[in-house]
Length: 423
Image (tube, rainbow, N blue to C red; front, side):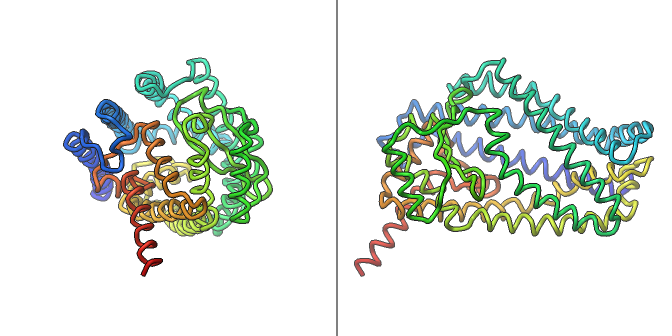
Protein backbone atom coordinates (compact mmCIF):
# COMPACT_ATOMS: atom_id res chain seq x y z
CA UNK A 1 0.00 0.00 0.00
CA UNK A 2 1.53 3.29 -1.13
CA UNK A 3 1.71 6.41 1.01
CA UNK A 4 -0.98 8.05 -1.15
CA UNK A 5 -3.30 5.08 -0.68
CA UNK A 6 -2.78 5.44 3.07
CA UNK A 7 -3.73 9.13 2.77
CA UNK A 8 -6.97 8.11 1.02
CA UNK A 9 -7.67 5.53 3.71
CA UNK A 10 -7.10 8.14 6.43
CA UNK A 11 -9.41 10.59 4.61
CA UNK A 12 -12.17 7.98 4.41
CA UNK A 13 -11.77 7.06 8.07
CA UNK A 14 -11.89 10.76 8.97
CA UNK A 15 -15.16 11.20 7.07
CA UNK A 16 -16.63 8.07 8.68
CA UNK A 17 -15.62 9.01 12.21
CA UNK A 18 -16.88 12.56 11.66
CA UNK A 19 -20.27 11.06 10.84
CA UNK A 20 -20.19 8.97 14.03
CA UNK A 21 -19.24 12.03 16.09
CA UNK A 22 -22.18 13.94 14.63
CA UNK A 23 -24.49 11.06 15.54
CA UNK A 24 -23.07 11.09 19.08
CA UNK A 25 -23.76 14.83 19.32
CA UNK A 26 -27.31 14.20 18.14
CA UNK A 27 -27.94 11.55 20.80
CA UNK A 28 -26.26 13.46 23.66
CA UNK A 29 -28.18 16.65 22.79
CA UNK A 30 -31.45 14.74 22.74
CA UNK A 31 -30.70 13.15 26.13
CA UNK A 32 -30.11 16.63 27.53
CA UNK A 33 -33.08 18.49 26.03
CA UNK A 34 -35.42 15.73 24.81
CA UNK A 35 -37.83 16.14 27.74
CA UNK A 36 -38.30 19.88 27.15
CA UNK A 37 -41.45 20.89 25.27
CA UNK A 38 -40.66 23.84 22.93
CA UNK A 39 -42.87 26.90 23.42
CA UNK A 40 -44.30 26.40 19.93
CA UNK A 41 -45.57 22.93 20.91
CA UNK A 42 -47.02 23.71 24.34
CA UNK A 43 -50.61 22.49 24.37
CA UNK A 44 -50.03 20.37 21.25
CA UNK A 45 -47.71 17.71 22.63
CA UNK A 46 -47.55 16.00 26.00
CA UNK A 47 -44.67 14.40 27.87
CA UNK A 48 -45.66 10.89 26.80
CA UNK A 49 -45.57 11.78 23.10
CA UNK A 50 -42.32 13.70 23.58
CA UNK A 51 -40.81 10.60 25.21
CA UNK A 52 -41.98 8.54 22.22
CA UNK A 53 -40.27 11.03 19.89
CA UNK A 54 -37.01 10.70 21.83
CA UNK A 55 -37.19 6.90 21.91
CA UNK A 56 -37.91 6.69 18.18
CA UNK A 57 -35.06 9.07 17.36
CA UNK A 58 -32.67 7.20 19.65
CA UNK A 59 -33.56 3.82 18.22
CA UNK A 60 -33.38 4.85 14.55
CA UNK A 61 -30.09 6.66 15.19
CA UNK A 62 -28.52 3.72 17.01
CA UNK A 63 -29.61 1.32 14.28
CA UNK A 64 -28.30 3.77 11.67
CA UNK A 65 -24.88 3.71 13.35
CA UNK A 66 -24.83 -0.11 13.27
CA UNK A 67 -25.76 -0.03 9.58
CA UNK A 68 -23.03 2.53 8.86
CA UNK A 69 -20.39 0.45 10.63
CA UNK A 70 -21.35 -2.57 8.52
CA UNK A 71 -21.20 -0.48 5.34
CA UNK A 72 -17.81 0.93 6.30
CA UNK A 73 -16.39 -2.56 6.86
CA UNK A 74 -17.65 -3.70 3.45
CA UNK A 75 -16.23 -0.62 1.73
CA UNK A 76 -12.84 -0.98 3.43
CA UNK A 77 -12.61 -4.64 2.44
CA UNK A 78 -13.73 -3.93 -1.11
CA UNK A 79 -11.39 -1.03 -1.89
CA UNK A 80 -8.46 -1.62 0.48
CA UNK A 81 -8.71 -5.37 1.09
CA UNK A 82 -8.16 -6.50 -2.48
CA UNK A 83 -11.74 -7.57 -3.30
CA UNK A 84 -12.08 -4.96 -6.07
CA UNK A 85 -8.94 -6.25 -7.77
CA UNK A 86 -10.15 -9.87 -7.66
CA UNK A 87 -13.63 -8.90 -8.87
CA UNK A 88 -12.32 -6.70 -11.68
CA UNK A 89 -9.94 -9.43 -12.87
CA UNK A 90 -12.75 -11.99 -12.82
CA UNK A 91 -15.05 -9.83 -14.97
CA UNK A 92 -12.20 -9.19 -17.40
CA UNK A 93 -11.46 -12.93 -17.60
CA UNK A 94 -14.97 -13.58 -18.96
CA UNK A 95 -13.84 -11.92 -22.22
CA UNK A 96 -17.23 -10.45 -23.06
CA UNK A 97 -17.47 -7.29 -25.12
CA UNK A 98 -16.83 -3.86 -23.66
CA UNK A 99 -20.48 -2.96 -23.05
CA UNK A 100 -21.58 -6.40 -21.82
CA UNK A 101 -18.63 -6.55 -19.42
CA UNK A 102 -19.60 -3.14 -18.05
CA UNK A 103 -23.21 -4.19 -17.53
CA UNK A 104 -22.09 -7.31 -15.63
CA UNK A 105 -19.55 -5.34 -13.58
CA UNK A 106 -21.95 -2.68 -12.32
CA UNK A 107 -25.17 -4.71 -12.08
CA UNK A 108 -23.57 -7.41 -9.93
CA UNK A 109 -22.31 -4.71 -7.56
CA UNK A 110 -25.80 -3.21 -7.35
CA UNK A 111 -27.36 -6.62 -6.72
CA UNK A 112 -24.79 -7.36 -4.01
CA UNK A 113 -25.53 -4.05 -2.32
CA UNK A 114 -29.28 -4.78 -2.43
CA UNK A 115 -28.75 -8.26 -1.01
CA UNK A 116 -26.56 -6.99 1.84
CA UNK A 117 -29.05 -4.27 2.81
CA UNK A 118 -32.11 -6.59 2.88
CA UNK A 119 -31.69 -7.69 6.56
CA UNK A 120 -31.25 -4.07 7.70
CA UNK A 121 -34.26 -2.88 5.70
CA UNK A 122 -36.43 -5.70 7.05
CA UNK A 123 -35.43 -4.88 10.64
CA UNK A 124 -36.03 -1.17 10.11
CA UNK A 125 -39.46 -1.77 8.59
CA UNK A 126 -40.86 -4.65 10.63
CA UNK A 127 -39.16 -4.01 13.95
CA UNK A 128 -38.56 -0.29 14.47
CA UNK A 129 -41.23 1.23 12.20
CA UNK A 130 -43.82 -1.30 13.39
CA UNK A 131 -42.90 -0.75 17.05
CA UNK A 132 -43.73 2.95 16.75
CA UNK A 133 -46.89 2.43 14.75
CA UNK A 134 -45.67 3.49 11.31
CA UNK A 135 -45.39 0.28 9.32
CA UNK A 136 -48.60 -1.04 7.78
CA UNK A 137 -47.17 -3.21 5.01
CA UNK A 138 -47.06 -7.01 4.97
CA UNK A 139 -43.92 -9.07 4.41
CA UNK A 140 -45.40 -10.19 1.09
CA UNK A 141 -45.88 -6.59 -0.07
CA UNK A 142 -42.34 -5.74 1.05
CA UNK A 143 -40.86 -8.50 -1.09
CA UNK A 144 -43.12 -7.62 -4.04
CA UNK A 145 -41.80 -4.04 -3.82
CA UNK A 146 -38.24 -5.38 -3.66
CA UNK A 147 -38.71 -7.50 -6.79
CA UNK A 148 -40.25 -4.56 -8.64
CA UNK A 149 -37.34 -2.34 -7.57
CA UNK A 150 -34.82 -4.91 -8.78
CA UNK A 151 -36.53 -5.21 -12.16
CA UNK A 152 -36.81 -1.45 -12.65
CA UNK A 153 -33.22 -0.92 -11.49
CA UNK A 154 -31.99 -3.62 -13.87
CA UNK A 155 -33.85 -2.12 -16.82
CA UNK A 156 -32.81 1.48 -16.19
CA UNK A 157 -29.19 0.71 -15.27
CA UNK A 158 -28.75 -1.57 -18.28
CA UNK A 159 -29.97 1.24 -20.50
CA UNK A 160 -27.80 3.88 -18.80
CA UNK A 161 -24.65 1.70 -18.70
CA UNK A 162 -25.07 0.57 -22.31
CA UNK A 163 -25.49 4.09 -23.68
CA UNK A 164 -22.79 5.51 -21.39
CA UNK A 165 -20.19 2.93 -22.40
CA UNK A 166 -21.19 3.24 -26.06
CA UNK A 167 -20.51 7.00 -25.82
CA UNK A 168 -17.13 6.35 -24.19
CA UNK A 169 -16.24 3.90 -26.95
CA UNK A 170 -17.29 6.20 -29.77
CA UNK A 171 -15.93 9.45 -28.32
CA UNK A 172 -12.86 8.65 -26.19
CA UNK A 173 -11.84 12.31 -25.74
CA UNK A 174 -15.20 14.06 -25.31
CA UNK A 175 -17.31 11.37 -23.66
CA UNK A 176 -17.45 13.42 -20.43
CA UNK A 177 -19.50 16.10 -22.21
CA UNK A 178 -21.78 13.74 -24.16
CA UNK A 179 -22.49 11.63 -21.09
CA UNK A 180 -23.39 14.80 -19.21
CA UNK A 181 -25.85 15.68 -22.02
CA UNK A 182 -27.27 12.17 -21.94
CA UNK A 183 -27.82 12.21 -18.17
CA UNK A 184 -29.54 15.59 -18.38
CA UNK A 185 -31.90 14.43 -21.12
CA UNK A 186 -32.53 11.08 -19.43
CA UNK A 187 -33.39 12.69 -16.08
CA UNK A 188 -35.92 14.97 -17.77
CA UNK A 189 -37.33 11.96 -19.63
CA UNK A 190 -37.80 10.13 -16.32
CA UNK A 191 -39.72 13.10 -14.94
CA UNK A 192 -42.17 12.68 -17.82
CA UNK A 193 -42.67 8.92 -17.65
CA UNK A 194 -42.43 8.37 -13.90
CA UNK A 195 -46.01 9.52 -13.08
CA UNK A 196 -47.46 7.15 -15.71
CA UNK A 197 -45.05 4.20 -15.71
CA UNK A 198 -43.00 3.90 -12.51
CA UNK A 199 -45.08 5.37 -9.67
CA UNK A 200 -48.25 3.34 -10.46
CA UNK A 201 -46.21 0.14 -10.09
CA UNK A 202 -45.94 0.79 -6.36
CA UNK A 203 -49.03 2.79 -5.45
CA UNK A 204 -52.61 3.34 -6.52
CA UNK A 205 -53.62 6.87 -7.42
CA UNK A 206 -57.21 8.07 -7.39
CA UNK A 207 -58.92 11.48 -7.59
CA UNK A 208 -59.26 13.32 -4.30
CA UNK A 209 -62.87 12.80 -3.30
CA UNK A 210 -63.06 15.89 -1.07
CA UNK A 211 -64.46 18.50 -3.46
CA UNK A 212 -63.82 21.33 -1.00
CA UNK A 213 -60.10 20.51 -0.89
CA UNK A 214 -60.09 20.05 -4.67
CA UNK A 215 -61.59 23.49 -5.17
CA UNK A 216 -59.12 25.04 -2.72
CA UNK A 217 -56.13 23.48 -4.47
CA UNK A 218 -57.32 24.59 -7.90
CA UNK A 219 -57.76 28.12 -6.57
CA UNK A 220 -54.20 28.14 -5.21
CA UNK A 221 -52.70 26.81 -8.44
CA UNK A 222 -54.65 29.41 -10.39
CA UNK A 223 -53.25 32.17 -8.17
CA UNK A 224 -49.67 31.23 -8.97
CA UNK A 225 -50.37 30.54 -12.67
CA UNK A 226 -49.71 26.81 -12.49
CA UNK A 227 -51.82 24.42 -14.55
CA UNK A 228 -51.98 21.03 -12.85
CA UNK A 229 -53.30 18.07 -14.83
CA UNK A 230 -54.58 16.08 -11.86
CA UNK A 231 -55.02 16.23 -8.10
CA UNK A 232 -54.58 12.69 -6.81
CA UNK A 233 -54.68 10.75 -3.58
CA UNK A 234 -52.05 8.04 -3.06
CA UNK A 235 -52.67 4.91 -1.00
CA UNK A 236 -49.62 5.47 1.21
CA UNK A 237 -51.46 3.86 4.13
CA UNK A 238 -50.84 0.41 2.58
CA UNK A 239 -47.20 0.81 3.58
CA UNK A 240 -46.85 3.48 6.23
CA UNK A 241 -48.61 5.96 8.47
CA UNK A 242 -46.08 8.68 7.66
CA UNK A 243 -47.62 11.74 5.99
CA UNK A 244 -46.49 13.69 2.95
CA UNK A 245 -47.49 15.56 -0.21
CA UNK A 246 -45.56 16.31 -3.38
CA UNK A 247 -45.58 17.44 -7.00
CA UNK A 248 -44.57 15.01 -9.68
CA UNK A 249 -43.89 15.29 -13.39
CA UNK A 250 -43.12 18.29 -15.54
CA UNK A 251 -44.77 20.04 -18.46
CA UNK A 252 -48.24 18.67 -19.22
CA UNK A 253 -47.91 15.74 -16.83
CA UNK A 254 -47.66 17.80 -13.63
CA UNK A 255 -49.64 16.29 -10.77
CA UNK A 256 -50.40 17.14 -7.17
CA UNK A 257 -50.16 13.98 -5.05
CA UNK A 258 -51.46 13.81 -1.49
CA UNK A 259 -50.84 10.89 0.84
CA UNK A 260 -54.15 9.52 2.10
CA UNK A 261 -52.55 9.58 5.55
CA UNK A 262 -52.07 13.34 5.20
CA UNK A 263 -55.69 13.86 4.18
CA UNK A 264 -56.79 11.91 7.25
CA UNK A 265 -54.54 13.93 9.58
CA UNK A 266 -54.90 17.54 8.42
CA UNK A 267 -57.94 19.74 7.95
CA UNK A 268 -58.67 21.61 4.73
CA UNK A 269 -56.72 24.79 5.58
CA UNK A 270 -53.70 22.79 6.73
CA UNK A 271 -53.71 20.70 3.54
CA UNK A 272 -53.82 23.89 1.48
CA UNK A 273 -50.93 25.33 3.50
CA UNK A 274 -48.81 22.23 2.78
CA UNK A 275 -49.65 22.49 -0.93
CA UNK A 276 -48.90 26.21 -0.79
CA UNK A 277 -45.42 25.31 0.42
CA UNK A 278 -44.93 23.01 -2.59
CA UNK A 279 -46.29 25.69 -4.90
CA UNK A 280 -43.73 28.05 -3.38
CA UNK A 281 -40.94 25.78 -4.58
CA UNK A 282 -42.37 25.94 -8.10
CA UNK A 283 -43.06 29.70 -8.08
CA UNK A 284 -39.63 30.55 -6.68
CA UNK A 285 -38.00 28.24 -9.27
CA UNK A 286 -36.25 26.24 -6.56
CA UNK A 287 -36.29 23.04 -8.60
CA UNK A 288 -34.76 24.85 -11.57
CA UNK A 289 -32.07 26.46 -9.40
CA UNK A 290 -31.18 23.12 -7.83
CA UNK A 291 -31.11 21.49 -11.25
CA UNK A 292 -28.71 24.15 -12.55
CA UNK A 293 -26.47 23.72 -9.51
CA UNK A 294 -26.45 19.92 -9.74
CA UNK A 295 -25.83 19.90 -13.49
CA UNK A 296 -23.01 22.44 -13.20
CA UNK A 297 -21.29 20.37 -10.53
CA UNK A 298 -21.91 17.19 -12.54
CA UNK A 299 -20.24 18.68 -15.61
CA UNK A 300 -17.18 19.70 -13.59
CA UNK A 301 -16.99 16.28 -11.89
CA UNK A 302 -17.30 14.44 -15.21
CA UNK A 303 -14.53 16.52 -16.77
CA UNK A 304 -12.20 15.99 -13.81
CA UNK A 305 -13.06 12.29 -13.88
CA UNK A 306 -12.13 12.15 -17.55
CA UNK A 307 -8.75 13.74 -16.83
CA UNK A 308 -8.04 11.31 -13.98
CA UNK A 309 -9.17 8.25 -15.97
CA UNK A 310 -6.74 9.20 -18.75
CA UNK A 311 -3.92 8.18 -16.43
CA UNK A 312 -3.36 4.91 -14.57
CA UNK A 313 -2.97 6.56 -11.16
CA UNK A 314 -6.15 4.93 -9.79
CA UNK A 315 -5.02 1.45 -10.81
CA UNK A 316 -1.67 1.98 -9.10
CA UNK A 317 -3.18 3.42 -5.91
CA UNK A 318 -5.58 0.51 -5.44
CA UNK A 319 -3.36 -2.27 -6.82
CA UNK A 320 -5.64 -3.14 -9.74
CA UNK A 321 -4.00 -5.77 -11.96
CA UNK A 322 -6.19 -5.48 -15.07
CA UNK A 323 -6.72 -2.07 -16.66
CA UNK A 324 -10.47 -1.53 -17.06
CA UNK A 325 -12.43 1.69 -17.09
CA UNK A 326 -15.03 -0.01 -14.89
CA UNK A 327 -12.59 -0.27 -11.98
CA UNK A 328 -11.54 3.33 -12.49
CA UNK A 329 -15.15 4.54 -12.46
CA UNK A 330 -16.05 2.73 -9.25
CA UNK A 331 -12.88 4.01 -7.54
CA UNK A 332 -13.67 7.55 -8.67
CA UNK A 333 -17.21 7.25 -7.35
CA UNK A 334 -15.75 6.23 -3.98
CA UNK A 335 -13.28 9.12 -3.98
CA UNK A 336 -15.92 11.67 -4.92
CA UNK A 337 -18.00 10.65 -1.87
CA UNK A 338 -15.02 11.57 0.31
CA UNK A 339 -14.48 14.89 -1.46
CA UNK A 340 -18.19 15.76 -1.24
CA UNK A 341 -18.41 15.40 2.55
CA UNK A 342 -17.06 18.89 3.49
CA UNK A 343 -19.49 20.46 1.02
CA UNK A 344 -22.57 18.77 2.51
CA UNK A 345 -23.41 21.70 4.84
CA UNK A 346 -23.26 24.14 1.91
CA UNK A 347 -25.72 22.14 -0.19
CA UNK A 348 -28.07 21.76 2.76
CA UNK A 349 -27.80 25.47 3.55
CA UNK A 350 -28.93 26.14 -0.01
CA UNK A 351 -31.86 23.73 0.45
CA UNK A 352 -32.90 25.11 3.85
CA UNK A 353 -33.05 28.65 2.48
CA UNK A 354 -35.47 27.39 -0.17
CA UNK A 355 -37.63 25.69 2.46
CA UNK A 356 -37.91 28.91 4.47
CA UNK A 357 -38.90 30.83 1.33
CA UNK A 358 -41.53 28.22 0.53
CA UNK A 359 -42.96 28.39 4.07
CA UNK A 360 -43.38 32.16 3.91
CA UNK A 361 -44.80 31.92 0.39
CA UNK A 362 -47.40 29.40 1.59
CA UNK A 363 -48.52 31.75 4.37
CA UNK A 364 -48.81 34.65 1.96
CA UNK A 365 -50.60 32.60 -0.68
CA UNK A 366 -53.21 31.17 1.68
CA UNK A 367 -53.36 34.24 3.91
CA UNK A 368 -53.31 31.87 6.87
CA UNK A 369 -50.02 31.55 8.75
CA UNK A 370 -51.72 29.72 11.61
CA UNK A 371 -52.74 26.90 9.25
CA UNK A 372 -49.13 26.52 8.11
CA UNK A 373 -47.88 26.44 11.69
CA UNK A 374 -50.54 23.96 12.85
CA UNK A 375 -49.76 21.77 9.81
CA UNK A 376 -46.07 21.72 10.75
CA UNK A 377 -46.96 20.81 14.34
CA UNK A 378 -49.25 17.97 13.25
CA UNK A 379 -46.78 16.63 10.68
CA UNK A 380 -44.06 16.62 13.34
CA UNK A 381 -46.30 14.72 15.74
CA UNK A 382 -47.46 12.26 13.08
CA UNK A 383 -43.88 11.50 11.99
CA UNK A 384 -42.33 11.66 15.50
CA UNK A 385 -39.87 14.28 14.26
CA UNK A 386 -36.96 15.18 16.51
CA UNK A 387 -37.75 18.56 18.08
CA UNK A 388 -34.23 18.97 19.51
CA UNK A 389 -31.63 18.24 16.82
CA UNK A 390 -28.08 19.29 17.67
CA UNK A 391 -27.34 22.59 15.82
CA UNK A 392 -24.17 21.21 14.20
CA UNK A 393 -25.93 18.00 13.19
CA UNK A 394 -28.79 19.89 11.56
CA UNK A 395 -26.32 22.15 9.72
CA UNK A 396 -24.64 19.09 8.27
CA UNK A 397 -27.56 16.80 7.49
CA UNK A 398 -30.87 18.68 7.49
CA UNK A 399 -32.17 19.64 4.04
CA UNK A 400 -35.13 21.26 5.86
CA UNK A 401 -34.77 23.58 8.86
CA UNK A 402 -35.75 21.93 12.16
CA UNK A 403 -39.49 22.32 12.65
CA UNK A 404 -39.19 24.61 15.68
CA UNK A 405 -36.89 26.88 13.66
CA UNK A 406 -39.38 26.90 10.76
CA UNK A 407 -42.24 27.97 13.01
CA UNK A 408 -40.15 30.69 14.66
CA UNK A 409 -39.04 31.96 11.26
CA UNK A 410 -42.65 32.23 10.07
CA UNK A 411 -43.64 34.15 13.21
CA UNK A 412 -40.58 36.37 12.89
CA UNK A 413 -41.35 37.23 9.26
CA UNK A 414 -44.94 38.10 10.08
CA UNK A 415 -43.81 40.17 13.06
CA UNK A 416 -41.43 42.10 10.79
CA UNK A 417 -44.12 42.58 8.13
CA UNK A 418 -46.57 43.76 10.79
CA UNK A 419 -44.07 46.32 12.07
CA UNK A 420 -43.40 47.55 8.52
CA UNK A 421 -47.11 47.85 7.73
CA UNK A 422 -47.72 49.84 10.92
CA UNK A 423 -44.57 51.88 10.62
